[in-house]
Length: 148
Image 1: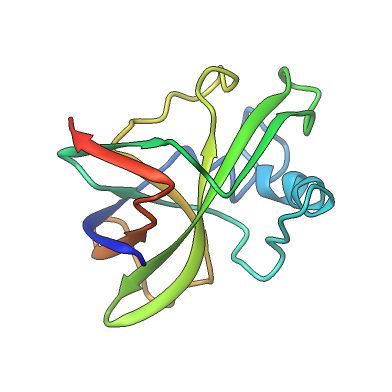
Image 2 (image 1 turned 90 degrees about the vertical axis):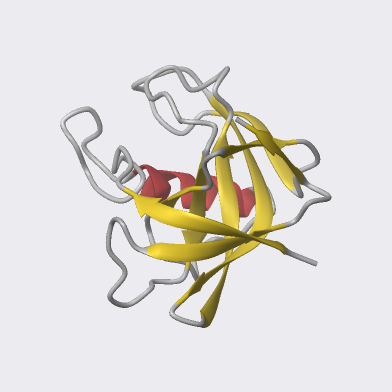
């Protein structure tokens, strides 16, 4: 069911996984209970995201499994819309289940996200580091790919 794409792990904004100067908490820590109440339980996954470059391709969430409009998860900025599509990550021949995490750019003012970067929530992957090659498996019924 998944279409496998070669990718490279990039460093993201690190807002999802840890406190920063702009956010005194991990974003996913605050979002997980809200997503669970809306029907998506992410508690079995690592409390952060992998930013996987699939360049030169870019992606568009066209029919995600979940979309949660205007989630009020912080008082630091207006509500954001999030979509999720089931995926997997293959690293060192081990497959890790996960979700493409897509904060809609039209509601996410504070951080620009490159349309060639898949942001993925998955299980913790031992020894993975920035610059590593991996594969991202996406559902082509939910995510459309095109040349960038």
